[in-house]
Length: 251
Image (cartoon, rainbow, N blue to C red; front, top):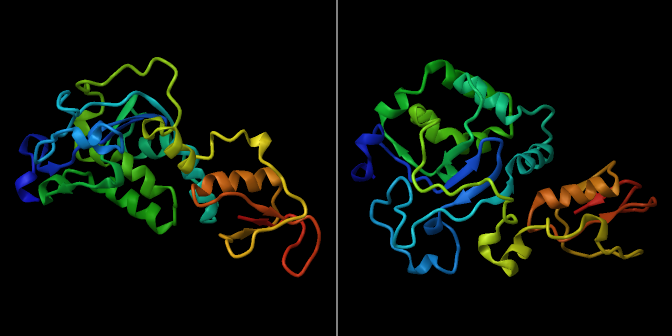
């Protein structure tokens, strides 16, 4: 990994694989790090460049809808979080300013940084992050994923990004680059929430994920969507029984 460190970027190895909207709404994915039909034919140098080369199949894909903030709210809710920082609050606490229009992201926080790079992060910022960790903020890992690049390279916050397409038009659907069949397997948003088929009475045995008491059908539906691809539907308690009470939501 040491051979991949880039002295021009402050001794880090951090290929940017996604550009996320500053409000965590919408994203450009890097073609060579996305599951697209053309990815197998693309060519990426070793080590990979920080930004797409703009040739050999290495470029930014079109702007897609991506409500990452809503996803994070769902995670925090499932973890029983009593309070949650909004992203702009979190960003301001670290950088003393609002987020830029577009954030450069190494997805999954997959990067390498040497001691010199890590020591550039102000000590008060590290202490603030530690306090949030100790307070159990479930949103923190996701927020950190999208700010690590700028935390280690603060001079890039408003820097122009070579080859970035315009995001002025209406975004394509979430995960559009995967193709329709794959997107339907991963994303519930294509289903009209008012048109989920209901079977009553009825249940599915042996495939339960978790049960949440005291919910409405609409809240149960939101929990299923937030849970992700593993949730294919829900059972809802409407009468008392040995297994369910009214308002029980079984994903």
